[in-house]
Length: 103
Image (cartoon, rainbow, N blue to C red; front, top):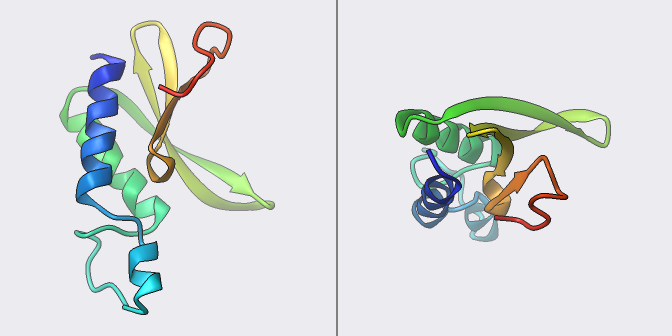
């Protein structure tokens, strides 16, 4: 498993599953998440795809403004830990000194 493969899966998901703001902008109530969804929907979709690809992937929750409302995926790749944030299309290493930028 490589960071490049994790990135490819994330990019593919980003292209295939739009964020729900497309629904919001058009005042449309989604009847399925197959064409995108909330950040939680997109994160769960990425988690499933990462696991199918063989990644050691785990779901995490985060608090924003004191509310448990944000989801992200932790990836263990080699001896590194990464967090994938699907709605921002970013994968960050937990070791910023060795990987100071978004990959």
